[in-house]
Length: 70
Image (cartoon, rainbow, N blue to C red; front, side):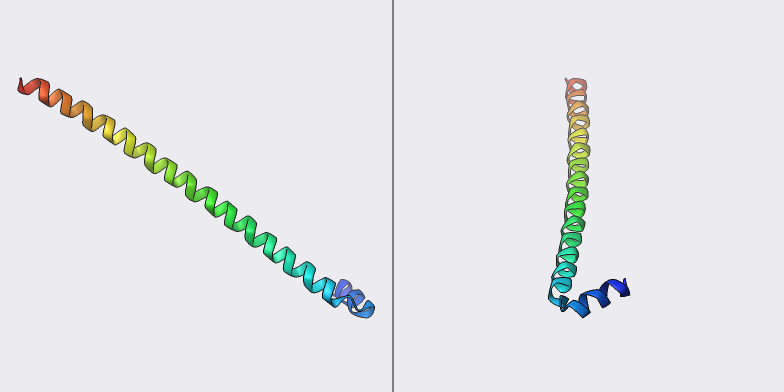
């Protein structure tokens, strides 16, 4: 890596190196954010699915309870 920096420094392309490093860091940050957003979406979907399952069970129990009361 130091050889690469030395070559860029000798040619006066430090601005290009800095721009490349900034773009690489920004791209890595974007990938990390997208991965976290995807994981959060999956967790929310799992939560909604469990809530739906809970509501179905509660409705069945309520229907059974109402039938027993009659």
